[in-house]
Image (cartoon, rainbow, N blue to C red; front, side, top):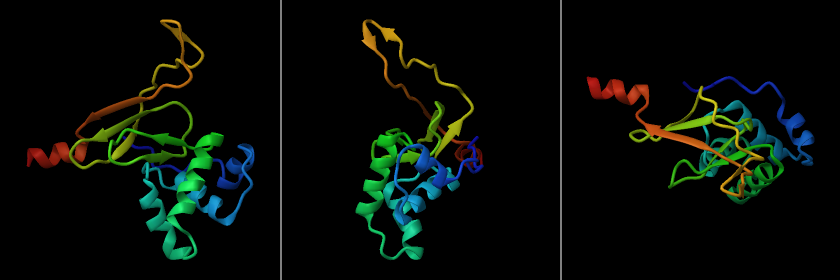
Length: 144
């Protein structure tokens, strides 16, 4: 279900392509997103990077993610009402969230491309497709 493969482009290349001046912290956050396709929260990224970067702060992670989203290097997911999550895959794709375990994964369903279209005189600039239910692991736990 989830694409656990790394994104082929390097974090450094993504930052440069999106007009972001690379720093150690920015590169660490970008590489983390690209290598860990788990749709992490700010806290998850901070907790995973802090042991190897003790000068890193949550504020730096938050500000870096904000910059990555604003520049198009990453996307912000609002699939989980309790936590904002982030994804390095910026091409349109569908996300699934399990109600039981809270895992967010990518699904192999292409969402409709609506950007640039008009619907009821409204110009569409962005669209997201979120699906909710139970992941295979939780379904199997319920069967046992």
